[in-house]
Amino acid sequence: MPDKGTLKKVTQVGGGESQSTAREAKPFVASDENKGKAKSLRLFAIISWIVAIGLEVGAILLLRKPPVNTTWLIGLIVADLIFAIIGSLLWKRSNRLNPASEKEKVRFFIQSQLGAIISVIAFLPLVILIFTNKDLKGKQKGIVGAIAVIALLIAGATGIDFNPPSQEKYAQQTAQVESLTGANHVFWTKSGTHYHIYSDCPYINTKRTDEIFSGTVAQAKDLKNITELCSFCENRAEKEKGLPAETPPAAEAEKTTN
Image (cartoon, rainbow, N blue to C red; front, side):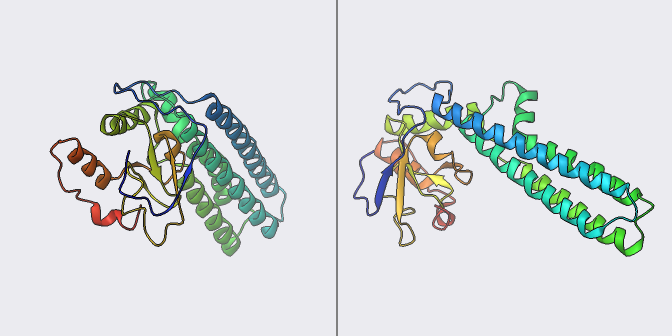
């Protein structure tokens, strides 16, 4: 989309699906490159989760050998948490590269929230065994139990995807951009939460912005913090097309999030 003068360096992002000029909404299909990246990320995520569950098993075995070494037990819980989080982050990243379809509800839920499911498996049995273990007494049980519960909550919160990507969302958002500009081409920054139609949008041409990236909607949404189209850009594009447009209600908020 032509702009009034971009003030920042613009970097074209390669890979992803091609920049289409079609006006009709089409089903989203991840590129072979993104499918390959997603497959690798999922493999590493699964390996990380296996290690996490292995550490949980180690902690459970330690509980069965009194007297329980508190230091070792806490160390295993912390290591379990680290690998559980790593697995969840890698898995969510893979979903952004190759999302599931909302039409397959069970598969979509499992694929989107697998990190949270694994986190429960990696900690809940251990938490139960800690509080029911007769060899842990008083303060020792309280400290270890509290650490295990906190680890469960942290891992679970990290594993949950509160705004899971889907093929339908990507297709809808791509069609919206194409209907406004005639091409699947947007701009974004690493720290922003929106993608933009115009490279000179005042919300990305700020003193804090060092570099602007350009590519497709899917490429922008590869970053977990980017969720939707900038309402300022949407409003401007509609006006240029002669469509009625309302003042973006969240325009002020976007000044600090784009």
